Amino acid sequence: MMNISDMLRLKFPNADFRKDIKLFDDGDGIIYIKEWNLDTPKPTKKQLDQWDIEMQPVYDLEQAKIANAPIYEQLDTIDLKSIRALRANDTNRLAALEAEAATLRGKLI
Image (cartoon, rainbow, N blue to C red):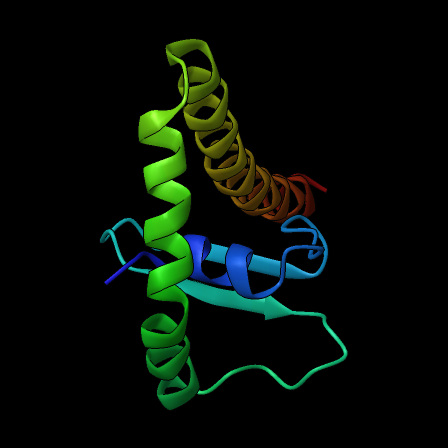
């Protein structure tokens, strides 16, 4: 079973994970879809489970290509995945902090 971000990245390769699909982790390690801004309906749990099965061979092939690539290409791919995940988490955390700051500013006035 692959993680939801990898599955959605493979299923929707042109999606922007800062605008189209926003994932979130409440700190419990479970990543879920917080916002869905694609033209297709937000997937149900059943659809996500089915996509996980369908996309597994594609994911396995991608991982094999990474494993068999020269080390510098592996590092670029791993780094890109890490940056995407960090960027999504940072964007969500920044939004929460901005909301908290606005609330505190309101209390000061």
